[in-house]
Image 1 (cartoon, helix red, strand yellow):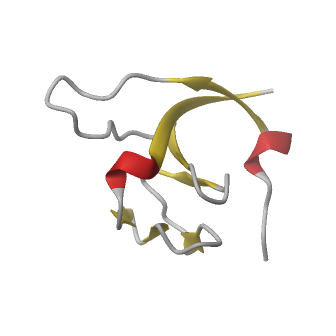
Image 2 (cartoon, one colour):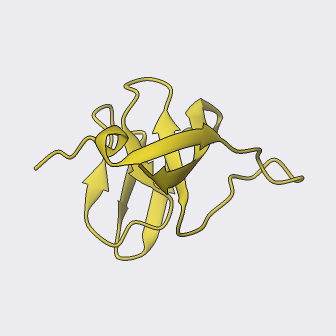
Length: 77
């Protein structure tokens, strides 16, 4: 089942960490540049973007190409 998180959250860009790594947290999400799908940075349910760049589940997220990720902060609408 695919859920469009844009219907639930308002997303704002967030900066990468000083070392260039992606931030993580309960309100941080990753948008794939390729397919524009959003996946939670700490995903507890199985989720993946359409092109396979981002996949998560069990509290972890795996990213194949971090340079093609936009970190976002999500707040409920």
